Amino acid sequence: MSLLTVGTVAFDAIETPFGKTDKIVGGAATYIAWSASYFSKKVNIVSVIGDDFDMNELEALKARGVDTTGIEIKSGKKSFFWSGKYHLDMNTRDTLITDLNVLLEFNPVVPDAYKQSDILLLGNIDPALQIKVIEQLTSKPKLIVLDTMNFWMTDPFIETLKKVIGMVDVLTVNDAEARQLTNEYSLVKAAKKILQMGPQYLVIKKGEHGALLFHEKEVFFAPALPLEDVFDPTGAGDTFAGGFCGYLDKTRDISFENMKRAIIYGSAMASFCVEKFGTERLRTLSHKEIEDRVKDFIDLVQFDIVLED
Amino acid sequence: MSLLTVGTVAFDAIETPFGKTDKIVGGAATYIAWSASYFSKKVNIVSVIGDDFDMNELEALKARGVDTTGIEIKSGKKSFFWSGKYHLDMNTRDTLITDLNVLLEFNPVVPDAYKQSDILLLGNIDPALQIKVIEQLTSKPKLIVLDTMNFWMTDPFIETLKKVIGMVDVLTVNDAEARQLTNEYSLVKAAKKILQMGPQYLVIKKGEHGALLFHEKEVFFAPALPLEDVFDPTGAGDTFAGGFCGYLDKTRDISFENMKRAIIYGSAMASFCVEKFGTERLRTLSHKEIEDRVKDFIDLVQFDIVLED
Image 1 (cartoon, chains in turn brown, green):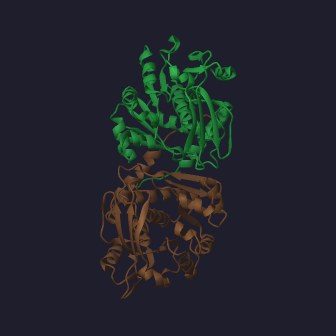
Image 2 (cartoon, one colour):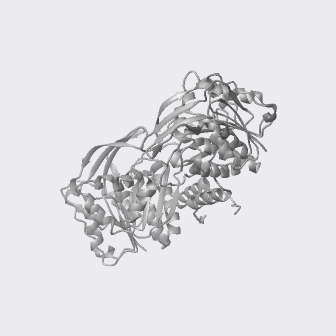
Image 3 (cartoon, chains in turn blue, orange):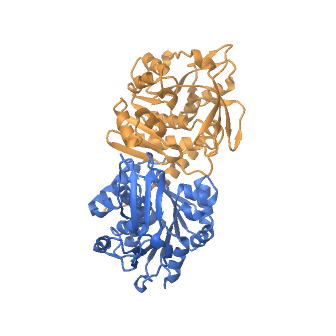
């Protein structure tokens, strides 16, 4: 199978209570690709960068089997840059700088070789661009997964976001975003409303509190691993989505039962992501490290009750 | 086996976004007893009430096999009264009235018949009183469980609280309290510190986000059931503790593996508690309803991953 993702490939400068970075490589598609590369044999990226980008970064992705030919390089332009500072609780952050740069004129072009990808993961980006990507595909993907954020849930973007939500199979948002999108505080009620907007599956990410998967009348809960320290949460949601889709692509099974497994693998990948700044921890993982981490998740929630009835 | 609990038996007046009550029966020991009565054949209460209390309430507990002879009735005095109002998120509340009344002169006396109880559950109350109860027992319980709250984590109570923490096997607190007690934001670090203060087991209750059980280097996570509505959270923590201890008492097994099961049963009981005002939902449960609810918890976290290594 093959996985196509669209999203930002960018520079980030991050400050946390544990330290700060200069410009390092970030962006939704970057985290997605690193994470998915541990599962999917074919990860295709559609994105845009300026010629200030470090081309060794693209080589590093290629070395992991990621196809970067869909990353447009705009000469004389600068890559998207985001800078943020996390608060002590690591759950909230202030954006210090957002330089859209090449994103201002991004018009995603899906290479012919990508047009029959099996899974499409729409990384967090303007929903109008997400629709453009869907419309360029020549065969309907087996699964379309949409990641988005609160920024697109306000005017003038919300109507376009609702349109793309109506075109996808799986939506992933965090708990605050699920509430904002539906005006419902109860996540169960919010999930019911979102499942009526189009998607058959909804993943609600709750950060350190785990993730919920809703489908029809079923619900699955995946815990987050209790960690001594969260070093840098940047990209954890993208890494989750990349692991989730990469696992589904590798296993060629988009059933609810397999999505549960995919959420555990996605959560495991996110738990690595937050251990170091940026994508650092995602660059050196071994198959055994991932399997050991998944075993930690199994042990965390494993209990054995024999019901009397 | 038998379970002894000490705590308040009281009146509450509760206001939530869904409605408000007049004075209804509440108090930690009340919730604990109702919850534990579904598991433990012998629940003994040490508490104090005024003669304004509705004696039919004690009869209702007796009808469930609860021994109320340890509830001292002070004639001419009023029962403890608490009134609170929950905010829209149901996670935070304002205390409107706290009338200590009979609690001001409460000097717990453990009846001889209770002095060899197998499990002692110290409900949330002044830690000095909790110590008095421990000291009256003639044989060491198989398990002492301590529930407490942030109020006792400040001067002049904190030193006495630390003393009682050093005398128990299991401590149950919520996440904010674990942080306050240790000055650690990371719950993993907080748990390490608390396990060095005496208890072999620590339960951190995270409300709608579930509960964590720490023991030596092991950790277990129990989810909370995603509910459409939380109608009234009052007493959910006490109900959890009552179900937890009642299950351990019924099954005569205080191993880590069985504590995991006990946490699921405690969580199931708490999920009933919040469905109606006060103890209402805890009064009419059937064995089948409890088993069905536990099955919901099993289904919620059940996944099947075969590791490759």
